[in-house]
Length: 122
Image (cartoon, rainbow, N blue to C red):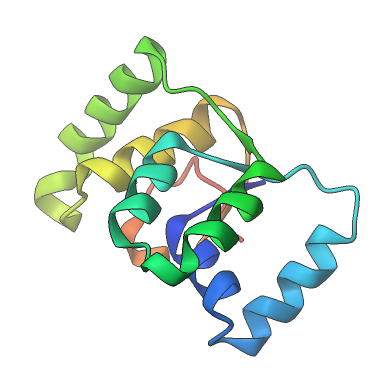
């Protein structure tokens, strides 16, 4: 599964016990958990100084999927289809493209950001 930025934030800050509990289950299972370099950038932009070490340790336990030319082209296609109608922004387009390209379900709290029918949301 691919983690969206909002889920990582909730897990690390522990504000939503339902998400934290679900993460505990996922982390203890054989589920392969991945993230996008866009998520790393979004997290890096918003991390509090007191959270840097925890964030680094958390991400080091996961695998970051690369963003390549195919991901970029697909993100552009998604922006063309959904930017005007749904307000799709570049970071979410790249995250969605990564999930679609690698045929991964996306765990997100922001379902409205991802209107793509070919994208499986968790």
